[in-house]
Amino acid sequence: MDVLSDVVAFMRGGRPTSTRFSWRAPWGTWFRTADGSASFMLVLRGSCWFVPPDGEPVPLSVGDVVFLPHSDSFGLTDDPARTLAEADCGAHHELYGSAGTDGAGPETVVLAGGYRLDPDRTHPILSSLPGVIHLPATLGSHSGLRAAVELLAAEIDNPRSGADVVVSSLLEMLQLYVLRAYFETQDEPCTLSGWAAALADPGIGRALDAVHRDPARHWTVEELGVRAGMSRAGFARRFAALVGQPPLTYLTWWRLMNGARLLRDSDASVAEVAERMGYASEFAFGNAFKRQFGVPPGRYRRRPAVA
Image (tube, rainbow, N blue to C red; front, side, top):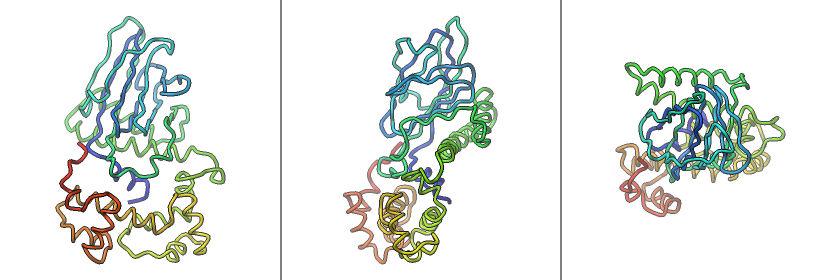
C-alpha cells in the first residue's frame, strides 16, 4: 500500500455517511459537525455559497468539491447574507440519507457527509492540511476525482441493486481522490513544506514508502538514506524537516500505530502483534506501547472503538 492510501485507511473509524440535500430557495443551513470527523460536500445540481467557519463565503457550482479535515462547522446557502438555520450533521448516520426544503426558487442539490476518524490514530499528515480544501470543477485536470463524483451522483440519484456497497466504496475513494488532488495542485516542489513536500520529494517519498510497506523491518538511517538516494546525514536532516520527526522515531511511531490497529481490528494475540511489528518480545512491545498510548496493549484492546 502506498503512503497516502495507507494513511487514509489508517485514520478511518467506521464507515462514511452521507446525506443528499435538495433545497429550493430561499434556504440556508449551518452544519455543526461532530468532533473527530472530516466533512465533505459536493454540488450535484444548481449552485450555492459555502460559508466557512472563518473567512469570506465561497461560491460553488456543479461538480465543486469541498473537504474539511478538522471537524470544522460550516454553512451552505443560496444567499450569503441569509441567516442560517442550524442542522446537526451528527443526526445523519445513514450511508446515504436524504433531506431538504420546499421553496419556490431554483433547486440546489448537494451531497454532504463525513468520515469518522479514530482519535488514537491521527496521522500528522492531517494537521498539515488547511481547514478548507476547495476543488472547483473548473480545474478539470483531476479526471479520477471527476469520475468518482459523477459515479457517486448517479448512484445517489438512482439507487439500484448493490448500491450500498458501491456508494460506500465511492465515498471512501472520494476522500483519497480529494487528498491526492489537493497535494497535486500545490505550488512547485521547491516552495512546498511539511507533508506536502514529503510526498512530493522523490527521495523522502521512497523512504516513506519503504517504511510503510515493511514497518517490521529493522531499518537503519543508512538503509533509508540509500533508498532516498541521499547521504545518511543529508537524508536525516531533510526527513526530519519535512516529516517533523527523525526517521527512526517515525518508524517506531508507525509500528505502534499499526500495532494498535491490529489489536482493534484482528484477533491476533499481543505476542503475535509484537512479532508482526518487529519487536523482539511481547514485553518490549508492551513497554513501548504503554509509553505511546498510556495503557498496556490488552487494556487498549478492550477500550470501546470509534463507531
